[in-house]
Length: 312
Image 1 (cartoon, helix red, strand yellow):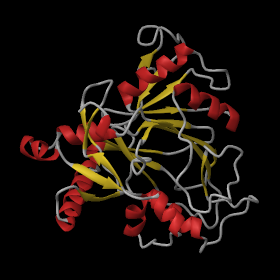
Image 2 (image 1 turned 90 degrees about the horizontal axis):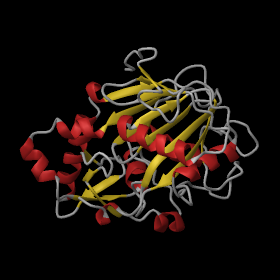
Image 3 (image 1 turned 120 degrees about the vertical axis):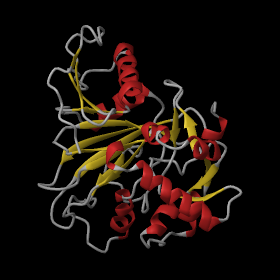
């Protein structure tokens, strides 16, 4: 699914004069790029933050290889880009093995570093990451960017697929676009987990994961392009009967995840991948998680406001 990258396809100096050593290599079908020439172990400067914003507006997903950063450096870089999401959406919050509570543990590891048991409730919950989704769409103010760093990867599998929601929107018939523009959907992580049979929520968790409204079509503030805002977290459309609403959502996700709209990232240790949740969807791919360790750590930058309060 990865389009072959042309070495030196874009090079800093002409395209990114603020970072002369920057190299940008295209990855996907019209979106996604590998970026070399950054060292995130150094404190981020305003110039670097502006460059990241430009890259994200252009490519939607950027892969920064060979970033041997620790948790503190990842947190520092993420916080420079924007306000961090304060609390991850997890079950058993008290069993958090990482230093920072704002950092989401995308791994199959117990607090003591052993692999989680096959029937562990947290493992069952985390399997939902293999569904197509958009990070934190189930929060009143959802995520703007997600930043996922690879510390340990399995010998096979565990890739991440990304889908371009701008291209998916552009490919829809004009009549359907007109129907979709005013629609508002309810999002909850309980909806996505129900798709795979997980309903083991405590009353406190259920209250914390209560549905929130989000626009189905969003306009990106930097590009001014319209995008589908989809996720497996959608459980209904305002004003629609639920069966009809869910069939529409399923059709749209199937449309948006056709081969021509996606690319697959195969991870290497110390890859840092940043994606824009306002104009992409993603999913994790399976691996032998009962045998091999996969240690990934995610931070997320919060958007400026709920989608219903943003310009449309």
